[in-house]
Length: 119
Length: 110
Image 1 (spheres, chains in turn cyan, yellow):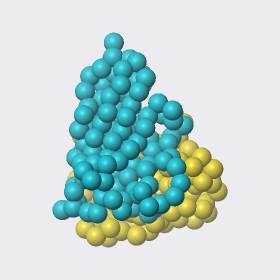
Image 2 (image 1 turned 135 degrees about the vertical axis):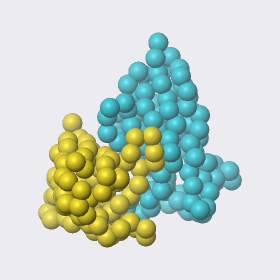
Image 3 (image 1 turned 45 degrees about the horizontal axis):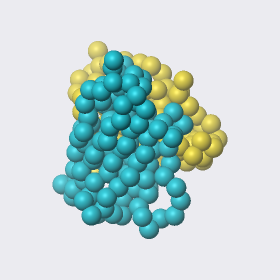
Image 4 (image 1 turned 90 degrees about the vertical axis):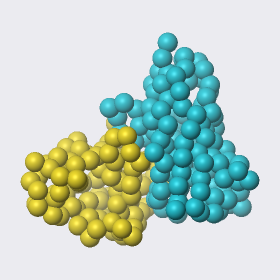
């Protein structure tokens, strides 16, 4: 069974940093492009970025609101995707999802992990 | 303000049909595949339609997708109370070099 499980969410103060993880199973992770998406309270889905497989050329893509603050990385030996979030703001409060970006759409999603940024 | 425009809400009675529109531009819908997602709060979003009109295995044929020019439409027939959810369209935007979602449409089955 294809599965994605996010972890690492929590409560932190503005200006803080946090790293989220996404453990993948049931598919060949090293061949997969992966994305992070979030949903703030009362808002819609917001794409954050995507990382290609190592054998594909080109940079990791990011959404404008998080470029320079968030970094997506992967450890194919651990079948794990990461989202490093720095200089967190209250508006970063959201449920964060990872998703398998399969060619032209997001095929499988995790159930999400909640990040709350509050003073 | 989302790059893709969806109606905030739609409603219909059980057994009826509903359509949800998604309007974009040539840099996104006009030149890229559209996919549709169903999302119940607290759960993982689920893809219903990909590549404009294809259904993943396990998605009933009550769900359909179409695209014309810079707009796309999700259709749901034989509405069930279990279809109550938020629905999002999404596609790649070649100008932004970013994935974009519509603002989401809340479906109420009366």
